[in-house]
Image (cartoon, rainbow, N blue to C red):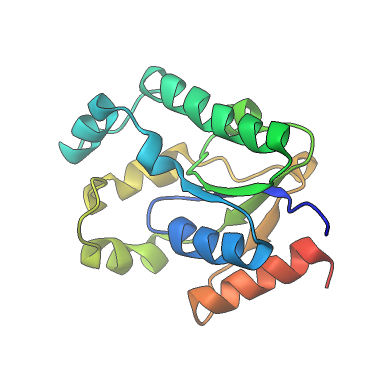
Length: 167
């Protein structure tokens, strides 16, 4: 059996990274981690208070995300990481041979309602403008697969799976 790839599913808060990433991991038979679960308590408290994170705030978190990805690579398991990875520098910190990037492209209007209805998450909808302000869409040399919103998250997952599988 072919080893599943390592995939980083990126995009702004509310883009569907967790739902699409979990679906993709299941289809690939690979582990899934939501990078939000790797944030230190200080970052969660700051975002919960409606404050955007700085690059310095993100540095230890990105190191933890990169460590999980390196563990998958070393173990040969593949894996899917849902991670905002909004800036090129963040993605560069996570990139390694064999890591595939999937960008869940969105517009503010396409995620505003979703964020407003989301419950139990520390990222308030009020921080959405800061997400789009920080977003550097992947450049062509990053070879990201860009996924635009589909009818359902499952449709989006299937299209990404097909693209990654060469189907």
